[in-house]
Image (cartoon, rainbow, N blue to C red; front, side, top):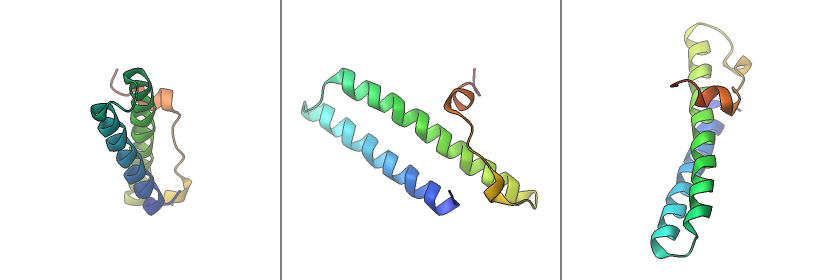
Length: 81
């Protein structure tokens, strides 16, 4: 994915997150379903942001950003632990 595609994916995930929260407030989705999907969205967002940072770091280092590969979710989620 190039930078624009990553940012478009982030925008779509954030929009879905907002829709889920609105549906929960409206009572049209079960809290458990919303929580599970939000957890998935948050992990995927973290992965997208990480890939974007990797691409930008490669660019800053004079390397090809297309060589940046996404880290798996388990790795991304363990950064702060």
